[in-house]
Length: 397
Image 1 (tube, rainbow, N blue to C red):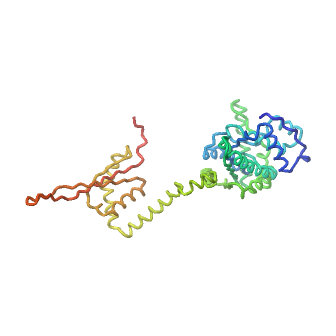
Image 2: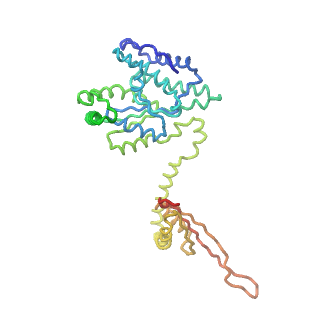
Image 3: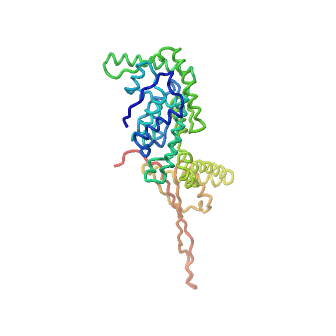
């Protein structure tokens, strides 16, 4: 995949036609490696954020949430190639075409086969349009190879746009704080000779420059990302909150959405089976409603069941707390009323236990009629109640 990169044009002569740029890059890839070898990741998370919004802090967390093992693709690092350095050293700009070419070739690497996090793309209107065309081409590839032996290489693409946002005042404060921390860190490295020096950005030491950097993000990158809101999954994260709140918001935003991520044909086959979360939520609501109804309709019976659990079952459960399983047998007539068993099971469920009840019926001889030879019996009911729960975490040999 080593391909000679055309020399970049001066900034004022750079081609700004997104269609022309994308077609030239795409055709170059097809000619150099073949259309059937364009195996891109199924999932792309395009991460953007205001300066000081915590992209570096949260990137690894995002990868963990989505199970992404590959390191993030940072566009600024891609643009640190020898070709890009030469362009920048000559006072030129690395244009959109070069950015797109470097990115698409990077995405073909095996480590990004399933998912990738992109940091710093798209940042311009041209890059936004190129991203749309890239998605369209991935869909076309999927259709083209869907009936071939290579179909598994061309999966339904899923693009996430994630924006970490802070306001300008917070951004400036965080940039300047980062500058102070960088100076302290670098001084320690210089004194000890241990560790790597961090980059000292001019914007981290001047509030006016920090503010200008924020405005650049707001006017260019932010608008570019928001323009994709109606096309791809869009996640806006308020990054001014405490880190634990921010990360909980990230988890909520990136929860599995099968209706959007599965192939439409696959989803249509599975859609009649409800999601586990939906069942759990509904079951919890139903449980609460039932317990409240017991209090209204069977208050005396509810108290009797609670007393039975407290007096007869909890001592046994505590005794077997290490194992996480306890069994109690009882012949009490309390549970001859069916609703009493339902109350018992629901109480344990509400308290975080899992309860099961087996009813064993046995005919017990009580009287023998000598004249008829008939044996009269009574029905004996034994309720075998098994309670499961999380046992002790101590090590057991």
